[in-house]
Image (cartoon, rainbow, N blue to C red):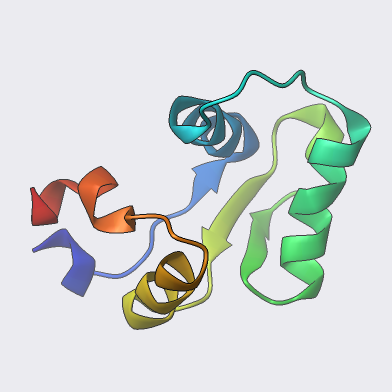
Length: 89
């Protein structure tokens, strides 16, 4: 299973594409939304792998928390993260 390999780096564009794919309501791309990425980095839930400017689109991020933590948080907020992971379908 890919979940045993660990997290791979991803672009901010990919993060936003996933966000928009799972969001039920439509929201525009705003500075407030992009600042949430910085908040996740400050909370050490994400880390920059390359670049540190979210606005330029060349930054790459990596998730720093494990699958168990993600599943726990998803249950707290009422989001079934397993349905979006291909290893669990």
